[in-house]
Image 1 (spheres, rainbow, N blue to C red):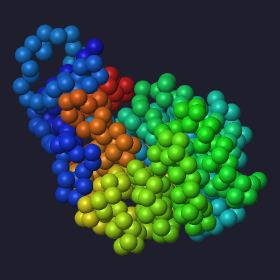
Image 2 (cartoon, rainbow, N blue to C red; image 1 turned 135 degrees about the vertical axis):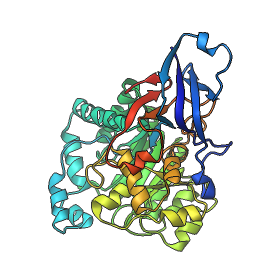
Image 3 (cartoon, helix red, strand yellow; image 1 turned 30 degrees about the vertical axis):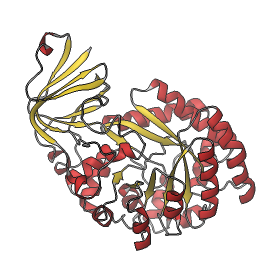
Image 4 (cartoon, rainbow, N blue to C red; image 1 turned 180 degrees about the vertical axis):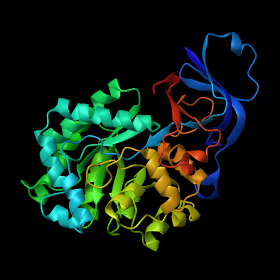
Length: 410
């Protein structure tokens, strides 16, 4: 059945005016409509406005009265690690007592701890855990999500994680995009050179043959993957049809951003530590700067310079980076609140960062991320008449309905 959302007090359209993303002053433009309605037919938005087209009310429609409520595009979480097993609450306690992320990793914790748990877990166990987490994300307004591998660090375990994502994509009511992150860390049982060879010549061909991933990622950081190693892995991925995304500049600036852009990366993620040359490299590149403030909050490290990036006309997206070691929260609304309070982004910039710019970070801003005719009917209805109240009234989920392709899913 087609859907008519009537009489919304506010509709935040985040309209694009033909752009793939919003940058600079445009990141504050939300295309606000008042006392308007939205028609979704065959899963796509067919009309938005005040005066209903003639004959619409005679159709067999599901009607939702949004009087006193506001409507937004579905939120897009473009960076998550939702597939994992095990628990790292003990490491959280260690950090609270003063241990650093790097010290915990050096002692055998961190990513390696989760790798052990993932390798032991069955595919069914991983799928059950990840499915519940993605449904939790949905209840905070996420209608499209990215999920990475990266806790396997072997061909068998990485493929197991990506198969979980593939199966969940077919079963859950949200869109899920898979990223291969074999270059997350180095396994204990292989030399650095042998593991890179396994990624490039065994994992990438097998994963692409099975069509298990859209993107390829790496952790380009001191003590992890070097710039040259990252470029080699990315170029091999591109050869096999994968699009690069990059973890970089979380702790150090070692040249990852420039390398990512040279390899055609669609986004660079983290960016807590930025040199002027890093900002210059991003200008006019078309690469999305995806910021993850929950990581800075959770690890007590510096926050990404969002204001500098936006003032430099670099498109900024936001994501949760939900993972067991540095951002244990599926709540994208919390990420948005942190962006306003601690990244000093304004409310309008923040909404564009989790809608149209997040869609651009996945290469799908032509289909989702804004309320415009022809785009998917991915919509959120909040039980408040003013969009600003969603972040003003922080810590409370005012979400009333989640709609995916014109169907109410939550």
